[in-house]
Image (cartoon, each protein chain N blue to C red):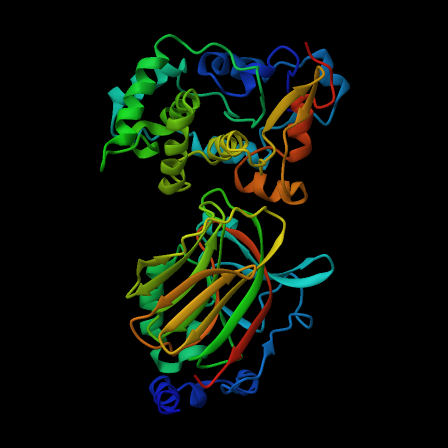
Length: 247
Length: 233
C-alpha cells in the first residue's frame, strides 16, 4: 500500500481527473476479477474504457460484439493519435508534458491505457486478440508498469515472428528483455488469449494457456496497464481482464 | 478512363517474377482485351486508391536516391526500365507461370546474397536505389528462396517509406506457402486440373483490409485478374 500511495501522490491523479473519469477509476481491489466490457461503447468511436495515447484505436464490431481495434493503416498515413495532450493531462495531470515528450519517440508503438485501474502491482492480466493484418507487423500486447513519464513494459505476440517477447521502454527507447523459447504460428482471423501474471518480480506469460515466459524482472511492477501494438498492425482486442492480488 | 486487365496472354508476366516478363506486362495492362470486356469487374482506374498509392510510392521525380550505379545494375538485371508503369504490382502470381529470368539476373542475385550476409551492409531501399530499384530487388530476390526470406525481413524492417508494400505483401504470401503455411493477402494462385485456383489462404474475410494496407487491388479484382475458375493451358 505504501507504494500505491506514493504513486498517487506523485502523479496527483485523483486531484486532477474530471469527475466523469474519476468515477470510473478503481482502486486495486485485490482478488477481484475485472472484465472490461465494451458492450456500452459506440462502434466507430474511440473507446471510453481505454485512453488511446498512441495510434488509432476505435471500437468496431466482430461477430456482432464490440471489440477494440488498432488500425495501423492510419499510422502509415502519418497521423498521430488525436488529442494526445488532453489524454495525457487526463491521466497524469500537470506532469503530462513529461509523458508527451517521452511518448513522441513511441510513435511506432500504439498504446491504449485502461482507465479503470490506476496502479497494478500484482495479479493477472489477460486479453483476447485477433490478428487482422499489417504488412510490417502484426503485434498484440499487454501493457503494464506504465509510469507517468511514459516508461512501460509489454509482453506481446508478433504474428510476423510467431513469438512472444517481453520488451521494456525507457525514456522512449525500446529494449528487448526476453523472448519465450516457443514459436507459435497463429492464423489471422482467429481469436487467441495472451495472459501475464505478476507477483513481485516474477513475471509469467501464456499464449492460449501454453506457458511462454517464466522470468524474473529487475524490479517490482507498479503502474497503469493496457494494450499495446506496433507500427501498421491491425489487431482486434476483446475481453481485457485484470485480477489484482496483494502479492 | 478505365483500364482493363489482359488476363489470358499476360498472366505469367503479371506476377512480376521474373523481371523480364514483368516489364512486358506493364505494357499490356492498359490494352483492353476482348475477354476483359466480358468481365467488367476485372478493371481498374488510375483514380483507384490502390493505384494512386502505388503511383505515389513509385514517383521518382525528385531523384532522391543515393546509389545510381547500383540502381542501374539492379534495373538492368531485372529487365526493368524506369519510370515504371503504374500500377507496378497487381499481386497476381500463378504457380508455374514464371518466365525465364534474364541471364544477367544471376550475377545480381549473388551480389544481393553477399550484401544480405554482410553485417551492417546497406540494403537497397528506396532512399538508396529509388522506388524502381526496390521493385527490381523484389523481382531478383524472388529467384532465390533463401535470399527472399532475408530480403523480406529487410524490406519489412525498412518500413513503408522504403519498401513497396504491394511487393512486400506478394513476397510474404509466396514465402508463407513455401513454408507450408497459408497466404494472407490472396496473391498466389495455382492450377488444379487446368483451372486456376486461389492457393490456400487464411482469413479471407479480412483480405480487403490487408490488401488496402498493402496497396493491392481489392480481393475480388485480384481473383478476376487471375482468372480463377477458368481453364488455362
